Figure (spheres, rainbow, N blue to C red):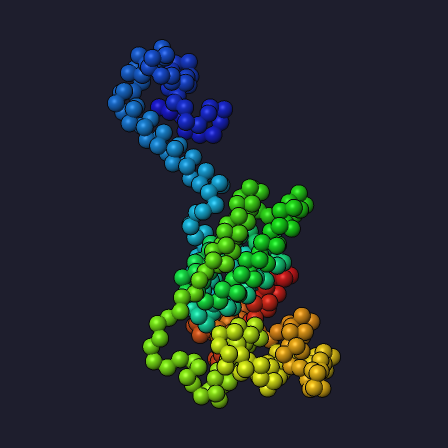
Length: 355
């Protein structure tokens, strides 16, 4: 019977128990122990058991190799939960604390990217993690991060929407990885350095795919945007929260370019994102002596953060310290759970796990 265990015998070898102890079983052509097998067990039973053990060794070896070296694995190393309990310290009932990596693994971000209301929230969270928190994630959380990022890229390639947003995310991640790989002797990337180099090559490949996207113009069916009255077109353009989208829209048609240069449009955009004090510090006058709101906007975004707005966000219940997506029921003992819910921005989510 082969010996199963981790000791001085090499795994994968066959061993036979003799009167003198355990002896390594050699091949029939070169072994003198074959004739002794029948004295200890039936050859048929021995071969079956030996085959089963060899299969176990092969499966275990393949699994280890896959887990350690295969970067393209799609295994999900996390539980998708609707809510999690955020605990920051040990108590008599619970030991340890919840980390950013644990929350990132357990909350269902993989399905959240399929919801248009949560897509921008998840992308912004991925960008913030890439800037400063990537090294604080565990190995499983880092692999989960790359799996979710791949799903985000595939979704954008299929839908041909939010292309610029994902380009900025990939560039931020690539820049962070370059600095971390160069300082790998000092820092904290989990895993082999070659694995991270391979991931950086994958990011470059994704960037090439995004740059090669050619947006196909849909077949004209019915009324288009330019067929609407000018007041409706301006009303729709006022819903755009990014000035770069206004510039891109103005490049579609000459009549839209005229609307995209409207001073009132840029004024409302500046007042939406920035305070009056910030605006007064960055005043720019045009040649006619009027405020150039468009130039002021692009100068302000280089100096101050823009206002963030999301269709759906994560919420923290201050009563029971449960983190969940907005509109998700959680087991709260408060009489009015909604009064205890606090919306968290992506930065607030990260700050929640800073101890």
